[in-house]
Image 1: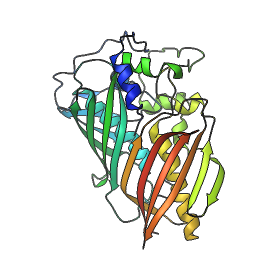
Image 2 (image 1 turned 135 degrees about the horizontal axis):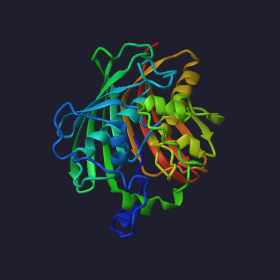
Image 3 (image 1 turned 90 degrees about the horizontal axis):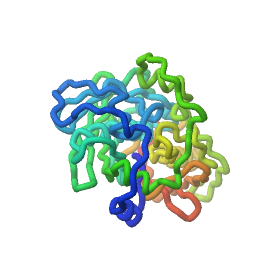
Length: 340
């Protein structure tokens, strides 16, 4: 659940020959063409390859299991609120999409920097009984393959600390070179640091770096202007600040679609509770389908909307949308089953 540009703009950017400019152009990289199984990939190696970093990147112990296959430990950084799982589906999507980009980097047609912009995702929560938020690290598995010259798909699985599978997600990516990304998103460029971070020579985990850089991904979005209308509900966020986009992407702060998805799921579950007259109700997601056609840049305001299309017993079917003005950023179709 990351971001994707409209196809016409994407095609234009890929055919252009302008030079790239990223913070990692001069970072030496080891050869990944024949990495042995059980090789652990450090965050410092991964950041230049997938072009996201902490605090958006929060995976631990990313380990190669085979060609295009990786496992990692996954933290739960945000309260799932109305969702009765170990982790909310939007946060699960964030971590799994990043893990999928790590797996995709192992099978990239060319070595070096690439941006993995997800254009679609399909998922389902696999356990139907209510569970409490996990206080332990979860397990993530991703297997990626190329589906075209500039596209990839990752099949991912999230498991409980004891190894029990709980969430399955498949993510499709457009794969951009650093040069193509810079051409496409040049208008989003901003210097997100007033001063470069001082290198003190200390090796830190992603969580330790995240504590040094305030982490915006540990709390729910501050939505406002809630407006109910029968079976629909909208709320807004903004203007989006660069601080809301930390680590995504370097020098080009754009709001991650995983975070946009969290806004849509929150509006949908809030609407469900309102329509049920049950502010304590908890739900589990199934038949999750996300489409991302655009981006929300720093400085823009995002409006989230949810509409309940139907209800069948405990199952509630929602169509959700996130927009900037008349431009649709992302769409989410999700069926929530009320379990409490």
